[in-house]
Length: 319
Image (cartoon, rainbow, N blue to C red; front, side, top):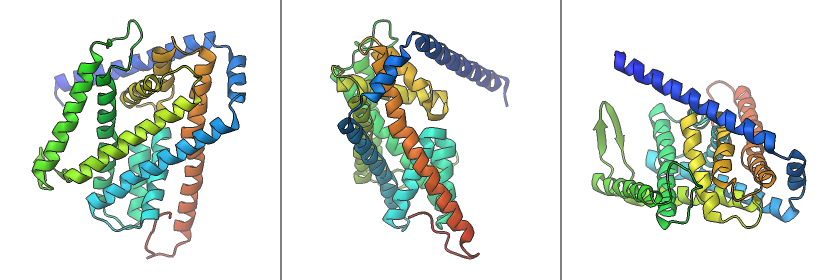
């Protein structure tokens, strides 16, 4: 490894720890000013209708996410059943959100899909397709939102409201380039620095955008439902999209602390502290912890069935 590369890795590592320290500082500073009794009263004050809506949005989002792997089935050209693919996808999604994309989303897909009879190359195509789907939909939705001018950063934010539309335009341009590339390559295998891959067909790429953009919108709708009245949906959506990038950069499991820090920075001047923290805690309970508990139970059942299966069985995953 060259000296310049080692130096760059060292700088990145230092930057990562500085970022984590800043997040921790902001959270501690914020926690000291929070009226925790009021947070508890806000959580207890959520009505049955609000909680039912939140649960419904969570289920809808997880089901929609499972369609990523259903679309990937066409891309990777395997023949696992729809219920099995959806079960694997939702389980991997819950672990990905809570323990990280590499170990959760990719690791669990590799393990369960391999026991379902798929080869390493096919699983790699599924994982790559799902990741690509998620972030291309992100670019589409975030680009459209920023270009619309409906997101208003707080005073002192690094990216001002005047610059956001330009950032959004760049995101939309990236989506257009992706679609054009999918149209021009038409499924041909591409070779880039020793890596071999192919882009999906244009109809499949359009499906990727529709699925992921809708899923990001559903996640923001869940947070919006838990927010106090008076907060605009575009503001909630913008904060969620920014927090997703920050969490991906930080590599913190479940984005713990990052999600809270971003929402505090972007919406803290609009939402009273106790209500904002209560909404974030309720969001984590609905979208992270609840599905994780179900995923742990589902994975335990899968492992139990796998151990009971006689040697030479088909290794099918959960249905």
